[in-house]
Amino acid sequence: MGTRGTLEVPGIGEVGTWLARPDATPRCGLVVVQEIFGVNAHMRAVTDRYARDGLLALAPALFDPVERDAQLAYDEAGFEGGRALATALGFERAVAIVAAAAARLRALLAEASPDSPGSVAVVGFCWGGSVAWLANTRLGLPAVSYYGARTVPFLDEPMRAPMLFHFGSRDHSIPPADVEAHRRAQPAAELHVYDAGHGFNRDVDPLHHDPASARLAHARTLDFLQRACGAMAGTAASP
Image (cartoon, rainbow, N blue to C red; front, side, top):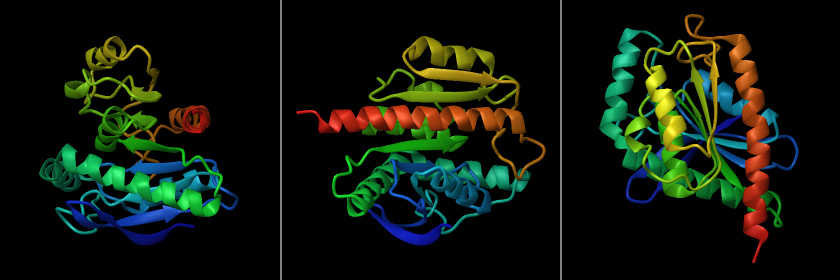
């Protein structure tokens, strides 16, 4: 369903993208923020699924400024390589790429429907979940964070749009104290904990995938995005 493309990011340069269009006029734009393994086949499939759900979905290759088209395996070498790439990129450049992706989506939404309010949200997984949080606090975008393990240092940043967190109760990278820190720091955010570990949405990884948790989290995500994009559309339409 999706197609490869490129995105010019001010101050950074060109990065690759995977763009998936819905069959009908899109309800909302969605920036899909990768795990530490790059925009691999799994992340492209996740992006395509959101398009089937009626969203105009765009996954930028966030690691391209460091390593072009990085696609890593779900093994120890992949984990180590992904962590190194995330550190080398840094959150500032990651957020800048998300901002450029959101701008591209707004332009595409306007092309699809001139009356579109251009509502755009973000969903991120793993490291991308923490990037999604920063897209909320720094860009004002509604965001969904799946098991973002690097968010705690940024929890003092004020939430600027609706926010949804998904966590696994058996996620050793995000202990219960960290989940509770999210609740205390951001009581207005929606937060759910599942009987699952880290990466429970990753259906290509049987060591981490939890089908029941993934289905429920996806349903909650779609409901959240429908509400959040509608709220942002109302804000955009108001004087």
